[in-house]
Image (cartoon, rainbow, N blue to C red; front, side, top):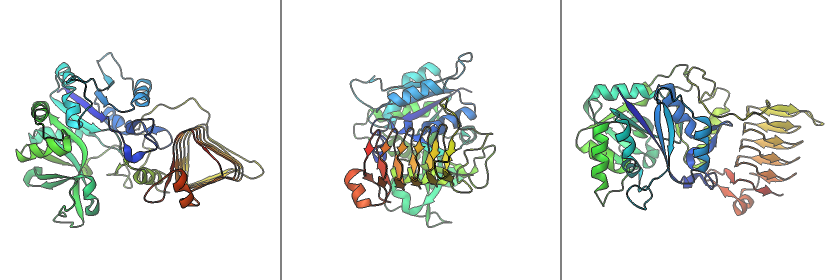
Length: 405
């Protein structure tokens, strides 16, 4: 059985601005050490999927560099993770949608000749064994299997919503509906697509080729391909909660988060620093792989008063010199000076927090310098005039800025 995995990593990620001002969404750092794409690639590799192409488009330099630097598989058995930029094989056009991204790269399918194709997103936080989903897909004899999980009905307009028939066949699929009906056994929930698909190769080839000829189509997998295959009775649903990953705990089993906007990105980080993590990064039986810089361990220093870090995660090379860090994630080489307070925040690589500064409920991108005594997240009206502030009041600061008082 030959399997090819296609990872869709070409989205702009506008809702994560300013973190996506200079990088593709899948390249956004997460959890102090990782990039968002590391979670999808780790799931595939842990499951024994070793032929993977990553389809990129917007601002892909840091993503391409990360893949080249981190994700090297053995060439002895023709294993690879290859970054594939938009090649404009149909003319001078960017990808018109996720289905068009697959269509414009069908040469990769013809070269590999797989029996099955996994098409996964690149920017969600979760653990999953894709092989279990593929096995169920093969047993079902469907052309397409869609991974799904339950979410609150109030969030239905952010997902593709699935209505099930008999034998796990999908009876109806609606993309981001405003009036989705609840589930029969849970009226306040709906069954939402995770954006992870298993295709029988012939089904995918025919579907995206037909879609490419339809000028009225949105050329999107969720908006165009899935509904078409549902109408033909060729689509099956896979219940993500049945997926069992080695080393999973009761607390993080079934965990999946779409972190495509600032509040969700922030909330997923707060999940990491809870006393019992909602998502466990310490599972060594199903590791999340990444590239780790050659830096010394984090250090807490007494500078007239002890440096403290409570309910927090500190990356390599972090120095807390007489400051206090609470419920926060500090990426490599962050420095927090004397009398500074960092609370409920996410600081990316190289951020320098000056003495006496206060940072609350913030996401701060790489190499930002916060001047001594400056305040972030204390006066939101003032912050809105200077920075991006999310709907939930999270202050987001872009790369390399100098924040004065």
